[in-house]
Amino acid sequence: MSVTGIFKAIFNALFASVAGPFVARIRTEWAIAKVEVQVKLRELRTGAIMLGVALFFAFFTIALFLTAATLGLAEIMPAWAAALVIGGLLLIWVLVFGIWGASKIKKNSDLVPHRAIEAVKDSLP
Image 1 (spheres, rainbow, N blue to C red):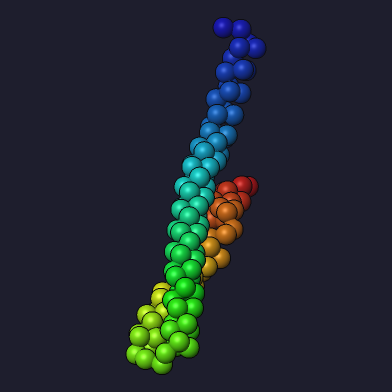
Image 2: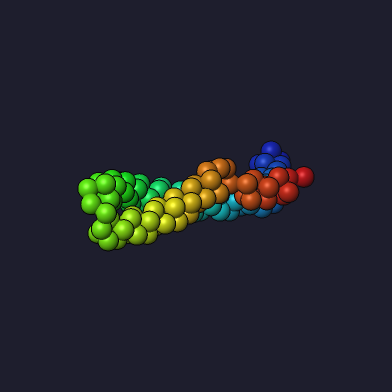
């Protein structure tokens, strides 16, 4: 082996011993960041579904309130009171799912993997 080959081998070994752990750390943090973003996207999807459920119930709530108002104006009887009670219950469902979905979307709208970025910054010299 020539002197140049020995120096190349020594340099490669030193470089691998210095850069190897850093490269491994970057790969690990990249994998963690991907998982973190996947979890946030899953939570965003759940929040969007909850808002969709809220909109679904809101449609029927409005229909029931309109029916209740029509029945109430047409004849003052317990039928419209029952429709108002059911409409009120559906409105509660709309509020619950709407607030729940909106909070999930607000909580997970930032898709930047902050934890992984901070871990990489801490590992830098």
